[in-house]
Image (cartoon, rainbow, N blue to C red; front, side):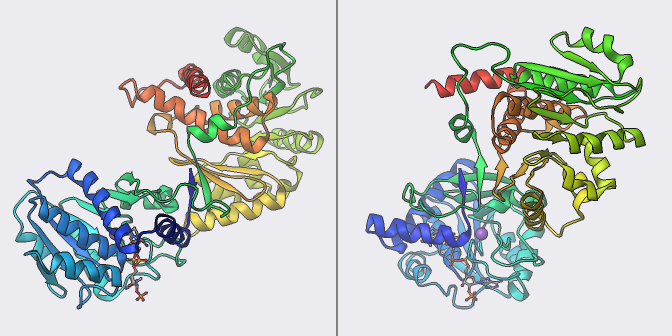
Length: 508
Ligand SMILES: NC(=O)C1=CN([C@@H]2O[C@H](COP(=O)(O)OP(=O)(O)OC[C@H]3O[C@@H](n4cnc5c(N)ncnc54)[C@H](OP(=O)(O)O)[C@@H]3O)[C@@H](O)[C@H]2O)[C@@H](O)CC1
Ligand SMILES: [K+]
């Protein structure tokens, strides 16, 4: 799914009006009606409702929502901050047509919405229609007071389109107050900022409400980014060849594990096996050869000169991708070996965990990373590598500059992982949940992505596929009714279920 900027969404509204021959007033009514349909499923008539309206079209939606709920028999009050209720022509139309003609009470600033709310019978809910995608600066003054009052109300807040006050990149350096919504019912498509970790407490439960904007209305426009869902994944899968042998699907190498951390090596190798490449060689400290043979008999094993850690380069003929880092350790001899490996190897590498820690300590080695490789830091590792950022937008801009400069791809791991590729395009992953927040989960992912590259996917595609499949495996596990106890060594089994699901979706 493509994610658009506020300006593009407003343009999409206009295109829809032109294509369908309707007015923006009609589109506003349609949007508000659909919104009310969703709202009533969560909050039935026994709830009384305070609708807080702002000066623009978001406030206009609020006026239509208030009158539709009133018609449905809800107890409704409106709270307006702007002295004349609204500055928008469309909203004014509905103010005269619907609100004035009804008996809905309107209360105004400087009375506090809290005081008005207290006059409603319980249970009650606040509808936040103060600002939507048109907010152009940080909220100050009366609006700020109102947002702070709303946030102190303990009952649910349901935001219309956007929690009011969220900048959506209309301006930089967000610093004003923002509504902390219980639900955000957003129109047509989620907004990019909803997926950023710093905004998670503001959005609450997200519900996207289709309002029938013209399909393909923004064709030819460049979206801000792609939200990776199953349809993107199925459209990028390479079908298995009919006649194949183990050489058909590529040869991957995993360099992972050191004394006391060989579990990381096993997990990364199992992750690689679940990615489906033809051959996997693992390079390990030589004292663990028997352990690996017994734990994962499918692997070819290359033994290091050291008994404890990675210290010498393996033979790399025919290896199409190397995954390196899980449990690797950071001894001086390992650091040296990583440096030599990056200089000598010319295909993509997937650098994770200790490989990233080593790079953080030696930032001038970044230039040695083979082109089209992948770095897979989580937030803290990213900040350690490239410095802290004010917010996710700044972090993404930084990642784009670095990715383009070094011709590498960067995965910033998190609840909604962000993928920035070497061309500067970026995506947000949609799959995954908290069962994956465990030691070893990243090791499996490193192996999986490495395997997909060896199998023949371009690195930037393998990265997106791997991240989505890994997250989806966590979702398949949680769908069984257990969102706690995933044992990471069983994760590859759930990756297998995801492949099955993908095969079924592709054949439909
Ligand atoms: N277009 C369509 O057909 C459809 C649109 N829809 C709805 O419209 C929403 C977008 O509406 P919008 O563009 O009017 O923007 P909105 O968020 O209401 O705010 C703009 C107003 O706020 C003001 N203002 C801005 N910042 C401020 C601040 N910090 N402090 C104080 N004031 C500030 C700004 O005035 P300014 O002072 O900048 O001149 C202006 O008056 C969208 O989210 C969706 O809900 C749906 O109905 C579907 C159909
Ligand atoms: K809002």
